Image 1 (tube, rainbow, N blue to C red):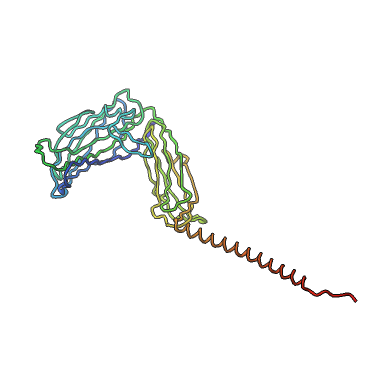
Image 2 (cartoon, rainbow, N blue to C red; image 1 turned 90 degrees about the vertical axis):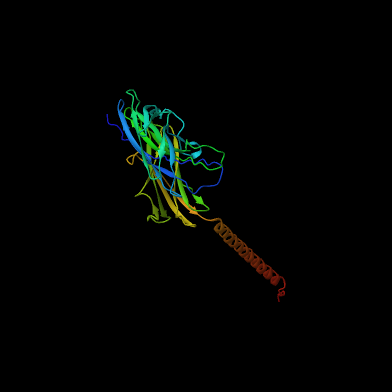
Length: 341
């Protein structure tokens, strides 16, 4: 059986929990690489991967960073058009966390456990992970993250001094697909372009719903034309954008023409492909009017002035015609009578 190659995405996050006190200029920051990974898994096999975390010197030369790292399930919050990574909730697509262990070279931890250690400024720490796929693992998508978090010095004594503690949390996300019964299905709905805007920019949007059992990619682009011309003013057709949708979720996606003029009438076209450029795309095209409110007032007053002028002109003509008729009648009434001889 031919299995579909995995597609990938990146969900990175940084969370700073700040204590009481003023900001410090001596703050260490750290990064994780790669932020995204893609793996294809076979039931019964073991896959090994690597994530590196790097401490950067900042402020007054940086400082020692204490960390903890763990394996976390990856889900998303897709309520109210949000599509935010969530790293503390499990579902049917995160069984992989139970198959995965993480190690920093000194400690090894399975799901619900953590490895801890120390990173000096400029030092890089490699975290390795191993995924032991069960023989009976079902086919489809599986999602997890390697999370690394800064923690306070565990050896420091709290003497009651008010200060600041930075707890920065970063993650490398792994999108995996287990070979087997793969179901790719989904739809594009609400492919929408607004027809009238008071202010730029023009933004087109759509909803992508994944009803399959593995993640899918949506690829989309925008084209903008003058009202009566086929020559593109703006296009992303040669460099389309791609986003990824997890199974069982709906993703709100939008794209924007940032350099939209303040005034204008355009033809805007949005093209969206679900999962493959070979599939039939969802296409919408609409005439978009961009007209600021001040111009609306000017147009309103001009139209009102024209209407008033036309009304006065018609009324003036009617009055002139009435006066002409009246004068003709009066002239006839005052005309002397001619007696017959």
